[in-house]
Length: 203
Image (cartoon, rainbow, N blue to C red; front, side):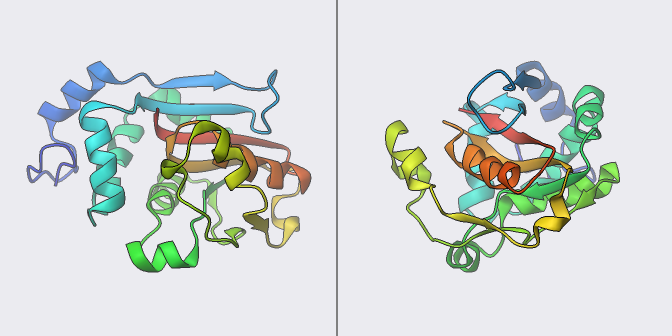
């Protein structure tokens, strides 16, 4: 089923929607190495608005987990983005709390990350970086509150698994980058070689 129009389609992205969203796609790779951020780059496909925003909200909050296949199909068809992702040793999702996982039934970032790793033949690791505090949702906070809200929320298990590895963290939306930056900080302080962020959209 196409995640944008709901039409039945074997590839989960119908040709009509594919052509339309390709025109609106940004597909950017932004370099953060010269900034104060802990992550080195941000790869994303769209601005967070219009039908992309609607699809992400349905995917995340309206129990439409199948929409990950639509996003995955779009990623697979972008050679530049795939080539950039293949530079990484490990793909892992931004973790969510056990409480949030139980309420939603799935980690939307893990669905994309796991299947992206499978398609591109990259090692996938889940439950290595974990969320140990069920903090307030970032979407309910202002820009200045977000960085404080994520401090100490994430923990790394078995640091040897990421030693000197190039790690790509996958999430759905990038807003202020506070969550991504805190996760990258934990990884870098445990001797990850580099950390990139991949999201479907940037707000």
